[in-house]
Amino acid sequence: METDSPLRAALGQALRREWKRMARERFGNRMRTPFIYVSDTPKLGAWKPIEATLEISLPFILENTWGTVVAVLLHEMAHQWVHEVLRVDESAHGPVFQRVC
Image 1: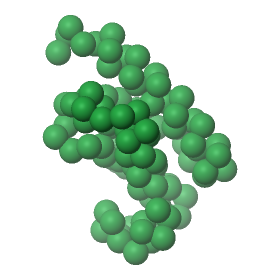
Image 2: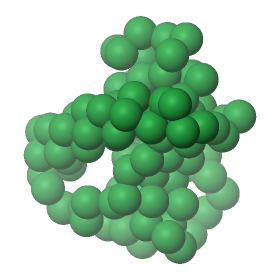
Image 3: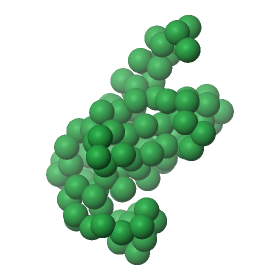
């Protein structure tokens, strides 16, 4: 939706700042910075390994606290860690992912 593009841009920048902070503090800067965007997905968020993108739902962001949004971002970063660093191919919430969380 065109009218909310400045909002999406601002939220995307804030999510990138959070990603960089958590990548440093929790993951030792061992992951590549993905393309992060705010989408209309019905899911809370998603890590898409083929595209190296991480998305967070705009409706979810608007209906929750920033702390909750950051928790979902961290959850998606755990998926990224399993894929990029551990190089494990398992179901989305398999045992390796659960240990990372």
